[in-house]
Structure formats: structure tokens, C-alpha cells
Length: 231
Image 1 (cartoon, one colour):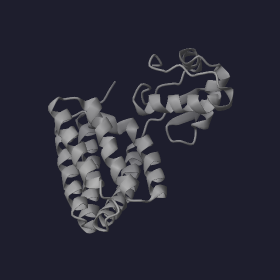
Image 2 (cartoon, one colour):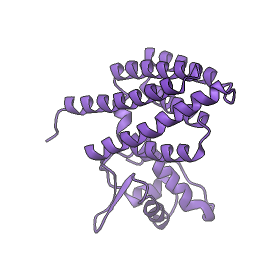
Image 3 (cartoon, helix red, strand yellow):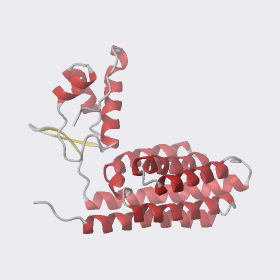
Image 4 (spheres, helix red, strand yellow):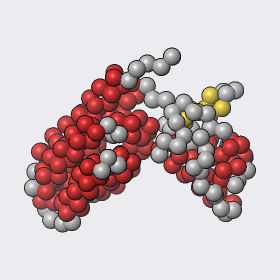
């Protein structure tokens, strides 16, 4: 599916980089589904660039975890295995717990004076969005919530690692956060994290963050177990 692709301008020096970014966006936002083959011709037509530029962009994505290059077959959006999902959640939990604890310490030390207000505003928006059953908007706010905490941790390397993990996880997390009960529980966990960070309790923030990620994995397992097998 390539109809949502945005036209890419003619700047040759950065063209492949821009095309890579657009293909990455399409995968992350679900416009290209897991297991779908990347059609160079369709993508090049949609973006107004050459097939060679698209091919170069696709090859540069090979180490991102988002696509698989298969000899004599082409490039496909990566289909994540259960073991991969578990490993990604484990890594994400470790980084997110560390980040929330660091953010709480920084709040307690007075370095992140606006973080509590930003988290609270985000929570209010998530609750309103959930009441309106706008799952796409909720997903964006969920990403923003975690991003606020990673930035609040004051550890740019950890944020880069986390962002790279989350890109891979978009392939399967979006579906889980389209279920009302999952959203409601996620908001409760966000509220617990926010209260711990706001009070500067690093250990409580660490525990709440880890519980949130473990809970997310549990909700994912419940979701796939309830999904009828195809075929």
C-alpha cells in the first residue's frame, strides 16, 4: 500500500535520505503492513523519484529492524516473532525504568521544573481522547508521554537507544493500543508513573515504569492469544 506516500522534492544530495525517512514513516504508521513487499515502482511513482533512489533508500533501512532483504525476492516489512517481541519489551523496560527513575531524581533536584505539568497535561489529553474513542490520537499521545520522560531523564544516549527500539515496536504495538480496555489500563499506569516522578520518588518511578512495560507485554500476549489464526 503506497497511496499515502508524500511527494519528495528534487534535492539530489539528500534525496535517498528523504525517501528512507518517508518509507520508515509509512512502516511505523502502518501504511505498509508487516510482511508486505516493498514495491519499488509504486513507491517511486508515489514519491516522484527514480526506482534507483528508492532502492538505495530501502537498502539503507536493512539494519533498522524494520525490513528484511531476501535474496531473489526483494524487501519486505519485517514480521516480528514472539521471541523478538519479548526481547524488545525486556530492553525497553530496562531503559524506560532507568529513565523514569532519572527523571524523578531530576524533578526532585529542580532540574525538570516543567515536566510534571507536561505529563499531567498529556494525561488529561489521553483521557479525553480515550473518551472520544480516538485511538489514532491516543497512540500519538502515548508516544509523546514516553518521549517526555526520556527527555526528562537527561540521558541523550538512552533516548536514542529507546527511540530505535520503539521504531521496531510500532510494527505490533499500535494494534494493542486500539483496544479500549488496554488503553484504560495504560492510562492508569501512566498516572502512577506521573505521580512518582512528580514527587521525586526515583524508586517508585522505576517500579511503576517497569510494571507498565511488563503490563504492556502481558496485554500483547493476551491480544494475540485471542486473535483467531488465519488460514
